[in-house]
Length: 203
Image (cartoon, rainbow, N blue to C red; front, side, top):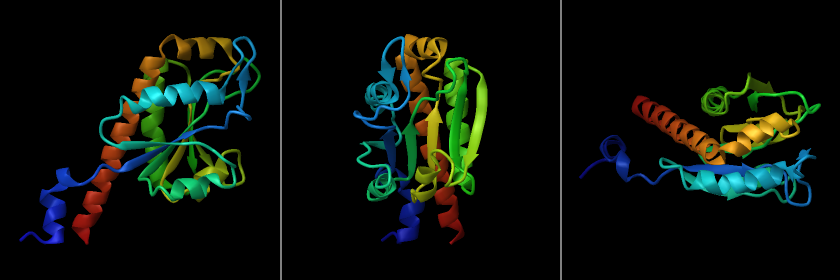
């Protein structure tokens, strides 16, 4: 009979897939930043995108998460016990700023690693300027979610929704954008799973 340790080593394929919590930024009655030309907000865009991502992810399980209240959101996510968290957003500024960035909690090494994976995938698809990965404290915008989720968490902002050119680029190939997210989610899951396996071997 195999010990629990040997089962971990030789029967990894029998383990259930880990969960990625896919958070839809904002909510229907508070849709976030809005593009005035097309009258589309972050929530509407990302809710549609999330369904497309779900059908493309192969390695992890996905659970879509909607915000009831922002203060309650980390606890709602933690109750799902995810392996990692991806929050879908769009950036906004002055209507001219452009590019892709991904935020993570400034003290989270894993958060930094998975933010980099996501950034590379999104930039590769959209071909917009890379604004890099952004460390956030709990006091900064988005930092509350990044700080108080138990699992590594990132906030993806692939483009500026108030920039018509950025939005046009994203909407021109939403299937491609969904695939870029899915590839990153699959890669992140595999990296985190490998790290956990390596840690188990050391025990």
